[in-house]
Length: 356
Image (cartoon, rainbow, N blue to C red):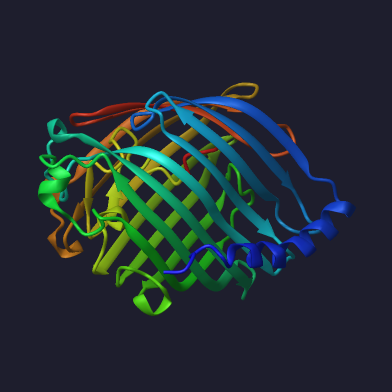
């Protein structure tokens, strides 16, 4: 396939005109931070982040995060994550990332053994973009584009990954187009206290658009924010993913994802993966002292070859406690520290931004 990233410059060029014009009239707040993070997948890592936030006219707050990361496992990445309201009726969001990332593999299914953990190196290029148009007061609709390129190394001849030989073990390009619809009545995008966020997407990957794999992916991400007393917020989330077709193992549904929106903190990312996943979570956020607040969270979920194969008795659980520190006055951007436990795993998470 010819360079799957050649159109990235075009997308950015189209967006840059409105951004530059508006930012001149309305300054953007910048927040620079060298920030240590910790997850079960990385151990300790240092990130250098630049966060821009502000409102381009009479719009909800936009944000853009540029991050460089280097972990004690010699994982390296650079990423750009924008959420930009070009006007009251147009929103562009997405991700651009380059990663050299030693990654854990346990097998496929919901009964993998933690003792089978092994590591391979993934060198990934990633581009995602959603361009949404407002169709009602809180409703948005638009196209989505996904481009990823996977390269694997350090896969030993006698390893579990080599023995399983799942789709994607040889690497390859994943290219897809689709549609995303969103309902968003949150009163704040960084640390909401009320409202509903509902994202439903369908993405189709096909050789006709340059993909090395032909498959479909459908996702549901629902989050409800309830203020139950002053400064006490209950967050309820539901997540579902369905994949069908020639799915590379890197694109299978997961539980245990530590990146926002976090899913079952306490499980190592990729410990359980399969075609489909269903997860329910709850988090209580409460004030402690000035900029410091606390959280308590719990959740259940599982993966399976089909959603109809999910069984209540097999559901995985996780629970934990955490602290939040408000890093900026202008917007509610939090630093977070979470400790999550699961049946035979646990994890400490030190990161930037809310879990969801």
